[in-house]
Image (cartoon, rainbow, N blue to C red):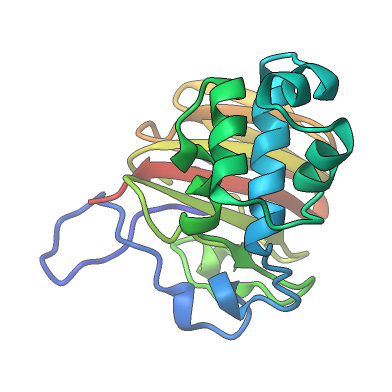
Length: 226
């Protein structure tokens, strides 16, 4: 069972520290991701125009007529097949009743992303490591007020129960293989493939009884970025 508790030099117990896996070879981020497939400005504008039109539940014919464009021209714009002039974009913005800048928002805004190939997650040591629990970090949040840490957890044949994890935030578990009984506070939950558990991670928790080993489950920990 993974825990978001990380040891800080300040010695503050139970406080989750930022993920340190960004420099690890298994995690690829942002523009370093293979085949990034960045959209051209024309494609970005077109996709945004189509998204707005569809959200307003307007047909292409209706918007084209309101903007003084042919349906064919609007189709080219939405498919990124042409570079519309500013006057054309202004007419389209009026027809959709949105600011002109709306068409450029997605192109200018950077969206963070982490990418992990199969079997290349970063091995992380946790309190349960000595009990035969193996943690593989599958990604990490790069910015924002909330930290999200997804782990693939494997309990080996010689793994031992450990139900004393406790940290801030919330946690989601999804059982993939094997069977166990999972403790959260004073409750016990039988877990087998397909079962899920979502809980306040501030209470003691962890696998109480290992029924069928080896076993794997997905653990997603969410907590405020300090």
